Length: 347
Image (cartoon, rainbow, N blue to C red; front, side):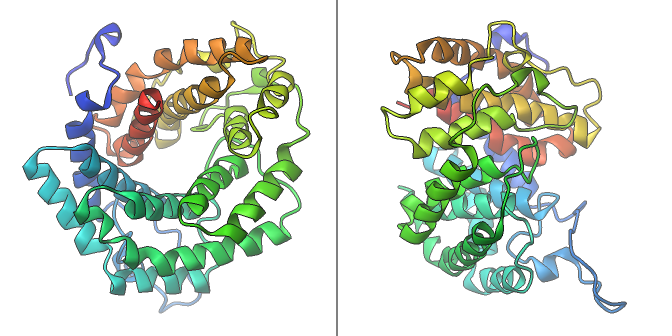
């Protein structure tokens, strides 16, 4: 994609669906490079990634493959060209077969801490997207993922029952972000026990938080804002009369000059960890929109105006990176780009 003046970058899904869907096609077709986080237990235990992950053995690593399948499902439903629609549908149908999903289920059952909680969260989100899609080629794949949902639910319930403390940093193991996606999907998929467990732990871990130190954010490889991820989760679990009161106290240190509201500087797009910062802009933009919308015209309207006022400024450079030439960025950024644009257009 040619460089654009940031003020001229369109901020609507209609302008990006074809390009982001094309990124999903390329990623889901690409087996290498692949970062296989497989724990080798002996000299003969050296499987190829697609042997142990026949459904999610593309897109650089397991969790990225899962959320690029989600992006494929979302762009198909939104509407892309017939050619891209056919390519994306073919990839989903080839990967998400009952046999392939059964292999993934077996792996997660045998390795119950694998991809906790980030990969689990995206797997649940993918299942929810399939189950609710208006596009027949997408929705008819939902049944194949039911066994995977069962396994992720069991692993999540076991984890929540044993975890004493949340993880609050800005990368994959962030607890609030994982819980939020799992909770949203559990509601859609009518997993009542999982919903209850997620809500209880959200209150237990985050309900009493006050005065989040936003000036301590960000580190040089974050793709999540720990503070905004937490607020996004509490938006899901708090009642409409509870959340503004919680937010007023939680965001008490947020000001118009807070670095949280400013776009990042990425000097080396080939550095995968530094490229995380593009994802930080995208995830912040989405969370700021969702949280800000709920707080508008409440006692926390000051927070709403700060968040929504900053959201669009976070998008242009990160959107361009999500469809750029660096595979180390595009293989996952494209899904966060779509999420941010969905949040912007939500009603």
